Amino acid sequence: MVIYLLPGEEKLFTKKEDWLEWSYDYAQDYDFPPSWKGRVYYVTCKTAPCCPRHLRPLQCRFFPLTPHLDPQGKLLLIRYPEALPYRCPLLDEDVSLRPDFIQAVRTAWEILLKDPLIYDLVAYDSQSRDPSQLKIVSLPKP
Image (tube, rainbow, N blue to C red; front, side):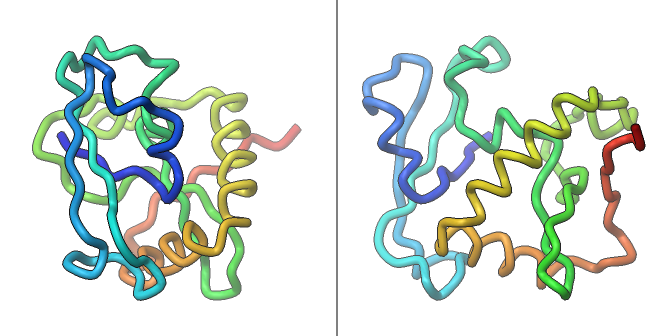
C-alpha cells in the first residue's frame, strides 16, 4: 500500500533506501488541504511486512491510530477509519493497544500539529468524518 509523507518528512530519508519505492504528485491535483502546494511524496514498502520498523514513515509507525480534531479543535486519537484493501488484525479484531504506545502517539501528534500544514491536513480530514462512526481511543485512567 502506498502512503504519503507528511510535509518535510521526506528529508528523513535519502530516497535511496532499497526497501522503499518513491513517487510524488502535486498536492493541488489530489484531495489535500488548499494550503498544501507543490510536491507530496509517496512511498511504498517493497519488503512489507519486513521493512525496518524503526525507519518507517510516521503514519506507519502510528497505525492503527490517526489524529482527529473535534469541532472545538481538541485532539482525539481514533482507530483508522478508512477501509483497507487488505485484512489487518489490529483493526479487524479490535486488538488492545498498549497505553505507552497510545501516549507516545498522542505526544507525537501534539508536536506535529504545531506545524501549520500538518494541522491543516488533520483539520481537513477531520471535517470529512462522520462523528458517530469514530472509534475514539483513550488512555486508561490512572
